[in-house]
Image (cartoon, rainbow, N blue to C red; front, side):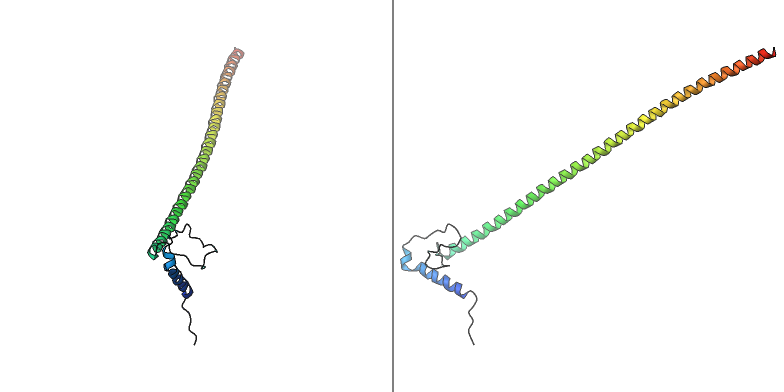
Length: 160
């Protein structure tokens, strides 16, 4: 029966080899290298995937924790920015809706006022026409009374 390797065994071996190389006597007199970026190493490195620890394992863990915290805060900032932009868009949408509603209200108010003016104008016209007709009726009644009076006087003259 073949013995299976544990997962990550090669990576552990590489890390152990890197640690041994970093702690060898020839590396003790060189100043520690501060990594400027977390990207991949250049191809002229002696060992691929082998990075010298800058100031020991503890600082490496602290640096890793700092990077995690930075990523978390960056994500949090991005979430806040997205939320703020969402609020801004919602506010713009609400302002647009309010302006549309106000425009509709102005239109309804204006059209109602126009209709009322027309109605009042037509009421005024009807009232003026009614007054004119009443005046004509009074005039006709006077004419009728005058004719009746003329007929009475004529009939009295005819009897005499």
